[in-house]
Image 1 (tube, rainbow, N blue to C red):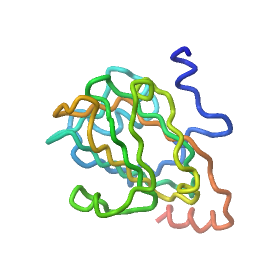
Image 2 (tube, rainbow, N blue to C red; image 1 turned 180 degrees about the vertical axis):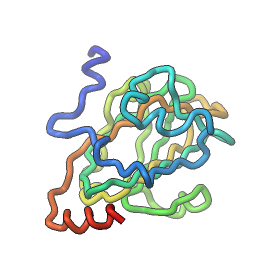
Image 3 (cartoon, one colour; image 1 turned 135 degrees about the horizontal axis):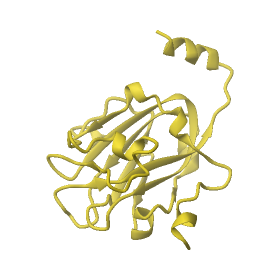
Image 4 (cartoon, rainbow, N blue to C red; image 1 turned 120 degrees about the vertical axis):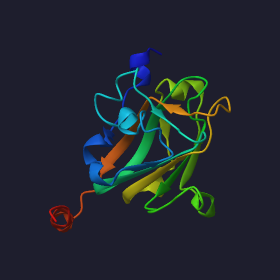
Length: 176
């Protein structure tokens, strides 16, 4: 499998980048000089020289709100072999999580990333758990080698939008 095939978007899904509400995106414990946009934003995440890096310890807590309701099918997280993420927990529609309460809630799904995943092979989530997602919290619990710093080169989320009748209502909220 070539690197190109490995980074392909799963059939029938779209890259959800365009549906992220950037004004609400947060990342706890990120290094100020190696922050989340490096891994999440178009262009930055394609640049292998740019990383999101953890700061005080190896954990990262990422909150991503969407500007419309989405269905999350799968994700790809790229990172280096040693410091790349290992255990990644996903929480659907859980707001205001922090390191002190992240373990109080059962994750919607948990993934253990392999070397193949860190090169860009998508991981399919428990699709039934991610049918009406307004926001996603990603908890990167540890990394491959137990290093002090976790490095994330790219985060891509794949899925589809939920066509709902209350889109006008969502738009109004955004305009304030």
